[in-house]
Each structure stands twice: as C-alpha cells, then as structure tokens.
Amino acid sequence: MTLGLIAGNGRFPFLLLDAARAQGLTVVVAAIKEETDPEIDRLAADDAQIRVHWLSLGELSRLIETFRKEGVTRAVMAGQVKHKQIFSSIRPDWRLAKLLLSLRTRSTDMLLGAVAKVLADEGIELVSSTSFLEPLLAAEGVLTKRAPGEEENKNIEYGLNVARALAAFDIGQTVVVAAQACVAVEAMEGTDATIERAGRLMRSLDDPSNGDAAAEPSILARRLTVVKVAKPNQDLRFDVPVIGTATVETMIRAGAACLSIEAGRTLLFDRDSLLARANTAGIAIVASRR
Image 1: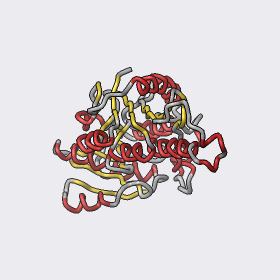
Image 2 (image 1 turned 45 degrees about the horizontal axis):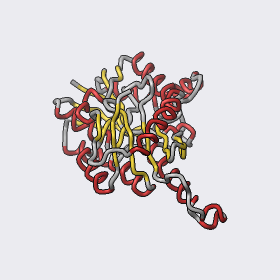
Image 3 (image 1 turned 90 degrees about the vertical axis):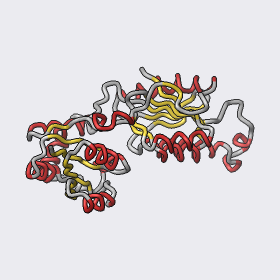
C-alpha cells in the first residue's frame, strides 16, 4: 500500500516516516519547500520505498496531481506548517486561491479542514497521524520525578480554563501563567515562541531601567507555568499538539518550571530525552484528561 505524507517542519515527518515504513508501506512525501527539512532527501536516497516530491506551500493543484500519479488514496499531515505562512509571500495557485476566498475565517482548523475536503473530493482520504504514532501519546499522570507544587497546581487550573477558551476559538493552544495571571497567550507564533515571549516579559519586570517599581521585590510568585491543550473538537488529522525537547529547552531559558498537557491527545517526541532534560532542570510535567 502507498501512503501520502504531507511533510511540514521539525522531526514529526521523520517519525511518521519511520512508523509507516515499519508497517511495510511505500511513502510518497510531498515536501514543502518553505518548511520541510532537506534531510528527507537523504532518507529517500537510501530507501527505494520513499519517494520525495518538492512543492511550494501554495501549490495545492500540484499536490493533488502528484498524489494521483503516485496512486495515493490515503495521506497524513505531519509537521507544523506555520499559520503565518498564509500571510507571507507565497503565491497560491488557482485552486488554493479559490479555497482561501471561500473561507469564512482563516483559522488553522478552517483552512486545513477545507484542504482535507478538497483532497477527499479528489479521492484522497486524509487520516490521523496518531494512528501511526499512538505509542507517543502522553499517558495520564505526572511524567517527571517532580510533581507540580501547590502554587503550580493553581496555575494549571487557571491556565486550563483560559487555554480551553482560547482553543475553542482556534486562536492558539498554549497559555503561560504566573501567580494565576496570564502572562502570554499563543496566536500564530507557536508554543515555543509564546514561552519565549513570556520569559522576556518577566525578565523585563526585573530590569531597573523600567523605573523604581521594577526594582521592588514582588509579593507574587514569578515562576512560569505552561499549559497546552487540545482544541475542544480537535481534528487529529492535523494540528496535533506536540511537545519535544526544544520546548523543554525553551522553558528553561524562559524560567518556566511546570508544564501541563493533555493525556491521550498530545504527542511526546524523544520522550526519554525530553523527560531526562526536564528532570535535570527540575521541571514538572503532568498530563491530565478533560
């Protein structure tokens, strides 16, 4: 059987590729010039069952034509395609331009859902990447040596309410909290950039150049808690919540000490390395269900 893979950025496409090949599938990769790691060409050179086709983010018609020529009837999306790319200098072909003009809003779900429908109309079923990567889904419970403390649990409870409301509008899925106050919310920039922004904001409060008030000791806890959720009606065919070692490293730089994710709906990449780094840094990670 031949599987189509629409590859975004990061390691996600490579993990999906490994899982699909372990099942004996031939994989036709639609690599996005603006996003996909060129390393994917090396894998294809070493494996006759992997075929890579490079195309621009705006070439929806070419994507369909490529999959049809390769006999693809099932495909997966793996790897982030930055939402801000739709406002970049990409040139949509006629099919994508028509799709964009037809959308009521250009949120992630609306856009990718419309692409999935176009593919389905052409006989290409988009399936969930989690069907290949189920072992990577976070199990319920505390995942690190350290459990969240009392203050962090309060932050998580507050953050979950904010994050779920945010996710319901398909704006973002991550909030960063300190002392039950929202420091940063995710929009187009992504999880790691949101955490970095929260860290910069908290550091700016300690900068004496901001005035006398900045130099005064705060009565509020300053350690950041990161809360990431799935959307209420998360379509796992695309935009699956993902946490990797890069997120932990970003948390360390930002001064974040706790991470809350959703069990069964969040993928953990490089789980052993991720948890080892979190343990070394004293970061608590907990996965809970709705």
